[in-house]
Image (cartoon, rainbow, N blue to C red; front, top):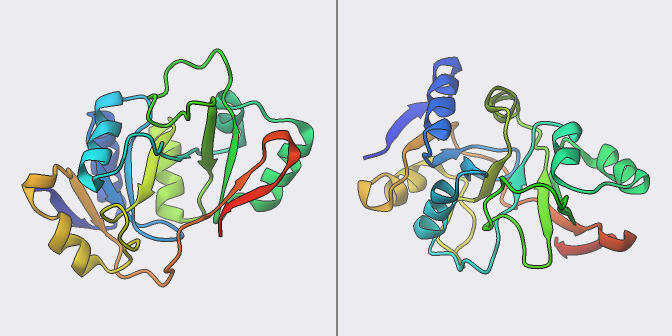
Length: 197
């Protein structure tokens, strides 16, 4: 059975320990509840795909703690940086080219064309968690693939609160108001193409 705890400073320590040991955490965000795992841990990221019944061809976005970390992972031009600064932290995920020399990320967060989707969220608990973990976190909405993203903690516990699905920790932040995941925008070649509204 996963550990189910209310959001608190003690929970933060438990979440850090779980992520660093290769576990999967369900955590509230500034949009919907999300699955989190260490983006450099291939087994941990693969667990999310298994839990969600997600096709491995659909790579996961990642959370980063700040723009500096984003620059360590992706190629960011001055124009792209201006766009990122205008929208982050917030509900915008941006697709960018991965840096050639970055080999630590799981191939399940890097698309075949060498791009990565990343975001700095705006949710106090999660932002603090990202700073303390100090590494990119693979993330995706809590749901079974093709089902709507989940915002009600009661239903999340009902569906994912059993040991069959291998979730390690569920952080109860109450019901969330948002019903939509982040907006995804492709910044490659300066196109600013919206992939998901």
